[in-house]
Image 1 (cartoon, rainbow, N blue to C red):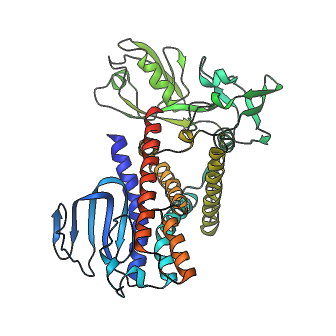
Image 2: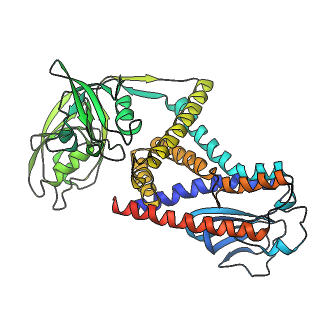
Image 3: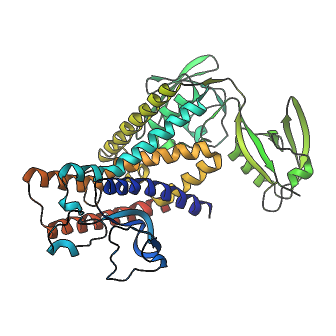
Length: 450
């Protein structure tokens, strides 16, 4: 249910921002926006100034005039604004046999059409820039100043890749790394689809690991490599829980359970789950004191705590001014855009499997839930990246997408005549079918990769 809720919140925000761009641009240019819909297909319920709040479809002869029907539709995988006199996702062609009205999209000059059709992409881009700007200005940046691995679990993926506890990573594929963020970027992002050559220092000697890409987990999992100084921390202790009875308090740092050292939230959950109904020693750090407690996990393998992670090693905090924060936010947009197209090129070139590079509703729900659990700042950053991705995809010159509409507008402007409605509808239909097939394939990949 968490996945469903956060998916609905994420998609709802992104679709609203995107469609609001089209809506406000159309209104500003004197066009009628007949429908503002979240979702596609059958109208579930909605509101307009003429009928008020109603359930189900509107009467077939309904004419809202200058008023918009705001609605929620059956398929929550997007949304649209129905602009009078425009061939769009509604596939309405009733206007085709009539003379253009001044308030219709088709009657407006080319520059206004371009403004309206690109306004959704502009709003998604603006959301990404604003969120990144806000994160830089209000949060700054925390830099984990280490490249040393704190712990490698035996028989784990990191172990099979050749990493060992205490390794200090010096470079990845020839790129020198100076902090943990750079380590993660080079292993999981910048080298996506490539095998790795990792230069590291081990026991005072320089060594080189050659790691096939198949040994690196997808999605940049935090538990793959753990920096020295990372620890599992208790966020909250539930009432009448085994942890409360054992004396665990919020803020405690978990050092070990059953004499097994703990370095991450995932590892803690695993170790606790392996000791159901057993009373085991639990060592925690509270302030400067190390406490030796005993805890008995339940039959479900739980001790009743909310758990997160804290870095106890060297950290550098950077703050940025108003204009510097905006510039950094824009740089992040440029970097992520370039990264997106680089990834697409690698997919086309066969270096990355399509299902590994692209995610659909299931992946969005998964990452939305995970980011929200980490905190509002992480969720907003995920939302910004997703908004930017939506902007990039929508501006591509593909039928049904905004980029496809833009191509038709520019062609009509160049030839100074409108492309026949039947041809536009045919293009929309073909694009819609291809898009739905692609979505079905992406969802299938999401499900088999769970």
